[in-house]
Amino acid sequence: MALLAAVASFCQNLTGFAFALIFVGAAGALSLMPIADAANIASILSAVNGLAYLRSHRLAPRWDLLKPTLISGVAGVGLGLALLAWLSGNTLHGLRVVLGVSIIACAVLLLARSQPRRAPSGTGVLWGVGLVSGVLGGLFSTAGPPIVYHLYRQPLPPMVVRQCLVILFTVLALVRLASVGLAGALQWSVVGASALALPVVVGVTWLQARHPLRLPVPLVRWIVCTLLLMAGASLLATAL
Image (tube, rainbow, N blue to C red; front, side, top):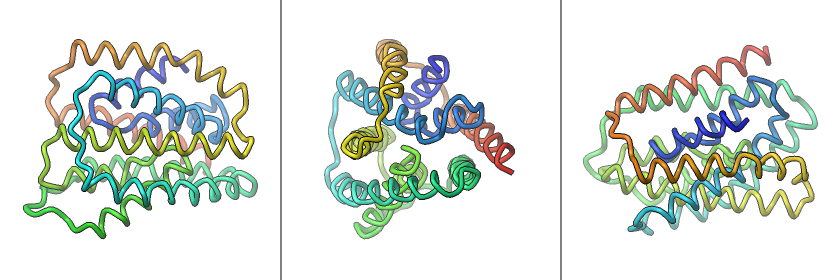
């Protein structure tokens, strides 16, 4: 689990997303733990990873982009948690299928990412994308695919996109954790497992901040997409 957390954190710091997608997908594919527990651990680790990133980098938040996605994303987290409770109680295989399809869809979107738009999209799109991202965040703590695809198509500098993604995912992870904790569904075994992986996550983030890798963007995209496709395909294979 510590190795899996290190790989997920490494990819998160390179791209601004993918921590929970890789962690929850691989944990489910390898049957390390129930998907719901993996999502809770991913929320804790993603929040810590995001806070560590924000502390070690200078920020210039684009609140015009963040406000609508944060508000609708928080509402979506509640819907996603309700759906997770229903799927966990009624169809575990269905839960694996939903997660596997979501992960593969994210990888396909990244590989087939179209050229950036010449003009930014309207605010209404941000509200809709934030809601869908929040639902996925509530389900599996994987809010990435919709908002990643949308922001990377906007005429924005990569650093601005990365910071917006980290801020959004950190806030949604904290909201999800608070909701799960208030509902009494956050088990001590999950907290203990997260505590064991925390030094790994913080260490990887600190090391990358001190010694950032200058990898070409296409190579980073292919590395992350390969990991996502492997995890998604394994989940679908075990479910079907």
